[in-house]
Length: 164
Image (cartoon, rainbow, N blue to C red):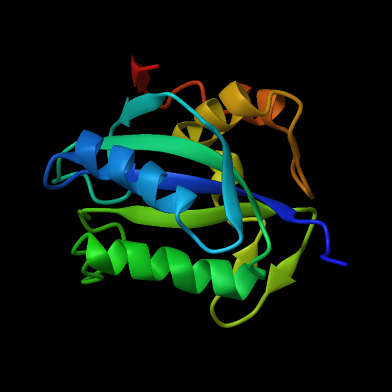
């Protein structure tokens, strides 16, 4: 008997080399991951960079998948997609062709040398919370609270829905 698939929310972001196309292609690639099904995807949102401001605005989205991959297998699969898109990790908050982060994986809490779940900064970022709320309005981030309340605390962060 196959075990029930896990649900995971994936954040997608890009600000280089046609970011809208990068995100749309990444949605298609999520569908091709082994043992994985794309359940839902948010609209695309435009946001200002965080941390390092001397770079183009980002295009962001969130996807909900069901997967038989373990959290670490999923992380490795996402890193492989980033590499295929030309992702280079030169410094923290640097511009990027594609960034894929596991936000939540079931209700799992994990902290090791390569993976922290829930994603450690997701509760502070409107560009994650708004698209997440679009596809999972009842979502609660373990240890942080309901996404609607968290989004209210991010009011000052500019975010523009650009594509439904």
